[in-house]
Length: 223
Image (tube, rainbow, N blue to C red; front, side, top):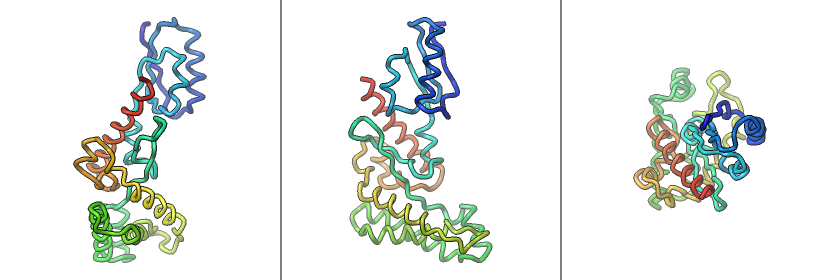
């Protein structure tokens, strides 16, 4: 065989993948090309240069845009690594099942949920054009977060730690405003919207941005 693909890499650590490659390399010709299925560890890819690693594939940057709870918005780091930001969750009040349950159980009125949703969105958009202060935006985001983090089975559950983590992550994201320094078409056209975790279309656009950043960083490392 001139070209072999190795699967099952997604759940493995970099060290485990190297163990697999060590074993496989002993059984194949030195010039046999190797493809890794589901390999996204570009921060450690230099450690794999001793193998005849010809290609890789991964959907991780795309999927993490809407499945990862905190590291779902990629940006390039200083040393060819990746920086991870937390996209701002503003679920749709008319479509999010969790919010609909809260309203049906009379824990919140639709008017309150809808108003705080709009306040969160409007404050972000005003911030992006320099018409809102950071503290004002964070206050509106946390006010809405308090609602959608409420457990309809246990509405008195303390979510203060979760809210504090969100506050810190959102503060870092907004202070950096990474979308303003990105050259991809998604960030250029969408602006702050790319950093909002809301709806499939928007989240998948952020996924395409992540793929763009991932690909550029991979090229820098390899070449």
